[in-house]
Length: 303
Image (cartoon, rainbow, N blue to C red):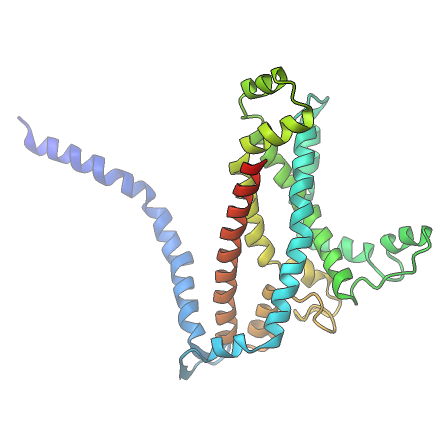
């Protein structure tokens, strides 16, 4: 009996799967785990972006952060924009997915069309929407003028700027979420719809009692991913800011957490404070993602 060969075969079966996945863990360790841990280390120091460690160790950056009014302003702006964008976004995506789930001519073209906003460069989207919301020559103000509404300075007000930025986010992500919902809808067993039809349920009742619970994992995924993306919002408000620099307007009326992190880290070169802010933002994302996930599960189960 070839004991050596048998041992080699067993060893090969145990070791080979780990060799296949080893590159992923090596890349994650270098580009994921190490930067995360290093950022935590930097957040505990008085660290300049150019000169490095200035010698102080402790939680001074966190203490300064939680006493900083601009941090709470950025947090409120981030949550406000997120809510204005996310709530309509998910319901619009559900509606579009329900329409695409019907028998349509050239359905592939329709599905490709709703995905186009997501593949367009965010810089292009930001520049176009900035022109649309221009106070003097914007199309939005021109349309509002047809109904007797005076021109709105969308960038100057808190809620007007939030609405403008939220519309950019919705434009980019509604179609993407709709296609995820569509794929999930097409996997719902047809027998459930037949049973609902035999029970005399209306199309509306069938949608909320059969379709929506059937795509619950997809909804949960988009809500968690949307929460993380929404709380790290940067490109759209940064491009909407006429002055740049990450201030989010003259009164910081639409400065988000990511913009404030950019301002502290790359404008004022305070890497220690920026690292502390990044960790606090990470914890906020985790808390909101868990809360929204539980909320969606309860809402879908109740429907």
